[in-house]
Length: 456
Picture: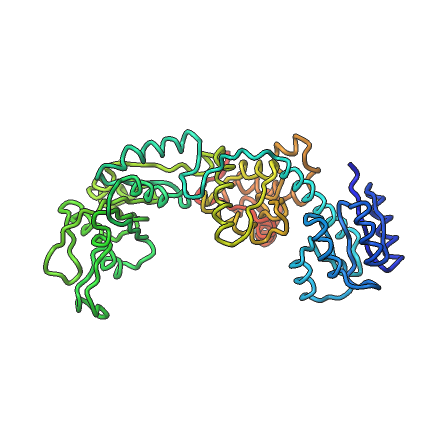
């Protein structure tokens, strides 16, 4: 279907030039000279997009923009103005303008802006036509239907009611604390869930945080302070990033687990504890033990039951459920409606590497929900690694040909992957200087692998 444009511009020469330009691009383009005639044409035959001048004989573009939003809230409107006024641009975007361009008009730049707005409108309609399954999970659940997450669910169910220590492993951002909280929630224990990030507290303070201290035991200890073990009495103590503990604290933690007592800093008597300990790390604990950085006997004590969380790359089928649940959580937090996700955008989510796992996905969704100007998550909101079309989409004919920049970005990324992130070798293969490579990495948002050897 041929897209239709309405150009509301009082300068007859510019209006005619723009109409001819977009007609040459295969679009239907009509013009209006003022607000009144523009509004009349909008009501008679609603277009797919409006190009709207700010200064018109019978009012301003902002005046009409408010009326347009009442007629059709999703209609793309691109504002045009000869005033280089940043506050005007801000106000136009706040009022619902899709984009804002300055005069004199750059036809090529305007063409890209219009093409992007029309594509986003198409995706909006595509997303609106998607059937709703009605079975999206709530944001508080362990989300997923993949085989990997089913195994995690089974492990939670089997260990929840016991007192055995649990050790959770997995990359950063996979949801280790979520699993720890679920174990506590299903344990039936009457005490609190208490979490400590062992990597976030300096060693000199961490001992006091874990085991407590007596008044006067060190400078600043003006009163007795119970430690996390005491606060987790009858409950669960979650030790995140436990592999970061210094050797003296590892020894003291081992004694606490063996004897079921804690010794506050500066104290003269031991305090009994029945807190269940769940520990977690994103490190390879066996490697840490072999390297002498973590006590083997403490590892045995902590790892009575082991649960490994899969990376997001291992459970790509769960992404639609995760996106739905996370957006519901984010929408509640920031006071905005959740966005609809077109299938073509969801396909990009399911082919991306996700080095930051679920945490990266949640951060990305938060960013796009704050920046979105419509109710649809469109590709222009995505960072560069995700905004490029997937190979599947290109083969299916759902996207236009790649631009030269996209081809260049993909080729440079392939060279970086081939060399394992070795910039010197990459420069030699590409025939460019090191500064030129760094500029391309920054420009295209490329990933430089670390601690990898050259590819085959």
